Length: 295
Image 1 (cartoon, one colour):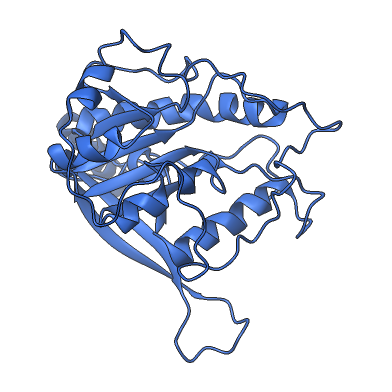
Image 2: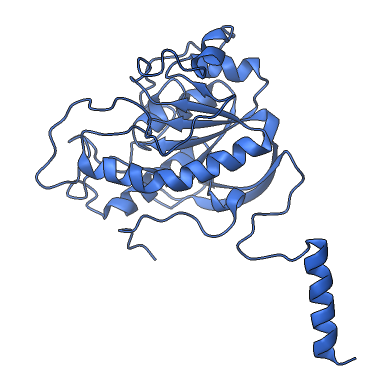
């Protein structure tokens, strides 16, 4: 038998056995597990002032049944048209990611703040409402602000609200629900408060994947946001390709919008928690916005 014939025979056997591996396939991990690469940054104690923290990547295996997924403020409409468009662009990939995490056994918690009136009769409210209050290391807050004793200043100036449209969009609260692109399935929970933390404790959650918007605002500060999750002792990770910032590139440090997002992600990796990307679960490549010009 020629070498080429042998390769063809072996390939046929692999196909029959379901053992053909693709670069686009998600990592082969046992059912009910998540195989992740946690990226973080840490400055050495003796590092000179101004030196960038070293980047580290750590392999991790999380049990899906001990993992929750927080979808932060993926609203149907934002007061900033640019923010609305980017949420709509990101939502199909996020829905795909959430579906796979749900299939593996993770707890999905939808957190569209300020819209619970829309969901008052939805079955997803029941598990959150029924969660028994749990003890906390420190009281949960409606919003956890930046504590300069715990973290450095944010690397972008969002003091103008962060809208990068010209002319600037008129502020307000036009959101009414979570964007319909993202499915809320049986067994998912819906909340926008400390109920999320109580439910996670009730379910024995140890790990949390956080995605949604906006990284420099609600993703950090909400009752279910990264600052409070980490403060309460949960192991959190930001899904860095499933988020966006409220940042106007005409404001300091005057970088392109998506570079501004990078800077906030790096801030989170340094001071709060590591980050991961959606392809670690789904395979393929990380998500990129169509207007993202970064290499």
